[in-house]
Image (cartoon, rainbow, N blue to C red):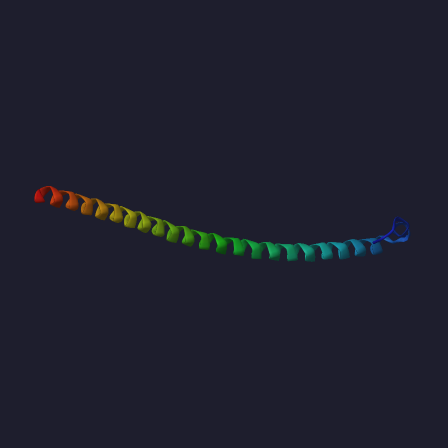
Length: 91
């Protein structure tokens, strides 16, 4: 880091050179940050895609479970009605 006293003794050319150097360093850091941001953005897109697939699978699973439960209740009701009708007709 440059001390204020050093700035006073520097020529304009030296100062401009230091400023340009610093700008180059900032640009390099910015490029690295931009690259990292793109990677994060790509990962986020991938996660979003995976989440949509998971939601579709979960929705299908939920629908299937609902159908199985409905079928089970229907079979229980049918069996109950069959037992009741057969016991009434035997009498």
